[in-house]
Image (tube, rainbow, N blue to C red):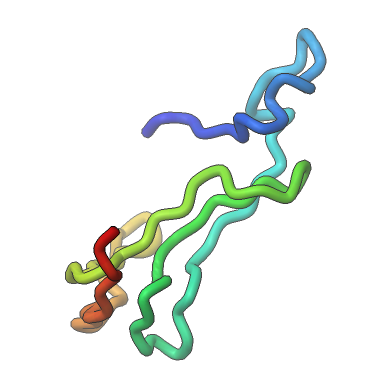
Length: 88
């Protein structure tokens, strides 16, 4: 895994403070409404310090496989995202 940090506020990090101690992020699913697909389904990491997205990933038009926990138990039960986005 690669570490992620907010590029908007990393410059405010005090000297001598580790990035993992400075970052204040939360993460989770976006757009999912009771597992009904929409064009904005995805996953986001949100910086609580500056209230901006660190990264947002949308699953547009692709099969989604979701694994959870240390045993990587599959939890998607065949969920397939079928929405598409307009080109351009």
